[in-house]
Amino acid sequence: MKATVDRDACISCGLCESVCPDVFKLDDESISTVIQDPVAAENEDCAKEAESGCPTDAIHVEE
Ligand code: SF4
Image 1: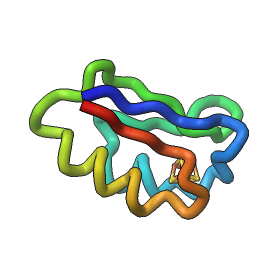
Image 2 (image 1 turned 135 degrees about the horizontal axis):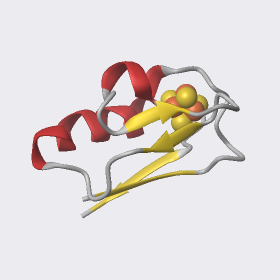
Image 3 (image 1 turned 90 degrees about the vertical axis):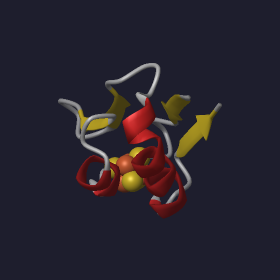
Image 4 (image 1 turned 120 degrees about the vertical axis):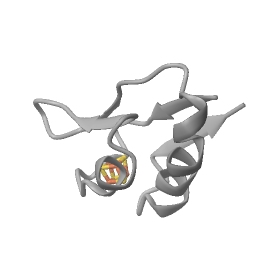
């Protein structure tokens, strides 16, 4: 699985980092970045949770 973040859409709410800290991390500009590529099998569920929970639909995950 691969996760991507649309930096222009991210509003730095921190939800993704909270629910899936092995995959998403807020960078120096407080914008979410993907730190695990490909997403490890054990993190696929939380990556999907972050995708569905992101308030601006900035996260996309694909198989
Ligand atoms: S959940 Fe969405 S808006 Fe919030 S920090 Fe993550 S990518 Fe940005």
